[in-house]
Amino acid sequence: MANAFVAGNWKMNTSISEATMLARSLRSGLLGIDGVTQVICPPFVSLAGVAAELAGSNIKVGAQNMHSEIKGAFTGEIAGSMLKGICDYVILGHSERRQLLGEMDDFINAKVRTALETGITPILCVGETLEQRDNGEAAAIVQGQLQGGLLGLSAEQIEQSVVAYEPVWAIGTGRAATPEMAQEMMGLIRQEVGRLSSVGIASNVPLLYGGSVNTENCLHLASLKDLDGALVGGASLKPDDFVAITKAFGTRI
Ligand code: 13P
Image: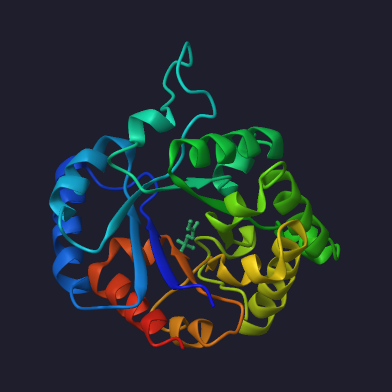
């Protein structure tokens, strides 16, 4: 079974000083919670400060994006090599980037490969829109995004990755997927990851759910068979809530 895993995606929130303070609160709040991989993903400008604040703790730092190229004329972009040493994880293919910035599977796949080659663990995000769910296309969309995102990876590389299922209609809306919906899709994701690697490897890949995870629904979500953890947006900005959610996944057996 994959380790329990909780990651906070701060998105485009917090000033540099707010980020450091939030990291400090989380450091003391999360102290002593064992058996859960804990990751926080602040904005780029705060990564170094947050990493310094968390030095020596169990909390890992992740970036919210990176470019697929190693260096060069890509104004405004950040390369994996620049994150190395600060970040252990990077969120890739988040639906906000797919939808608002037009990121496609092939670009996301190139980033996933570069992250792995750089020694940074990709958290590959997949998920359908409401329209796609209503049209009965959710499974096919998620399957396609998985195939696209993990294309060309060896089984070993897949084993070093994390997958997050974030239905677009559940992000920031307060309307989380029902536990039944989440389990159904997470089971399909486990199956597809297994088909692309092996059943044994798929059971080791942490599968996260994201989309309106909060202190109320986290215990139920944590009890689901194929859900190893959460990718938390809004609630990750509230230290007490993020700590409670992390604890809930720590109870997972
Ligand atoms: P919310 O938890 O705010 O719905 O955001 C989820 C998300 O997009 C995490 O990456």
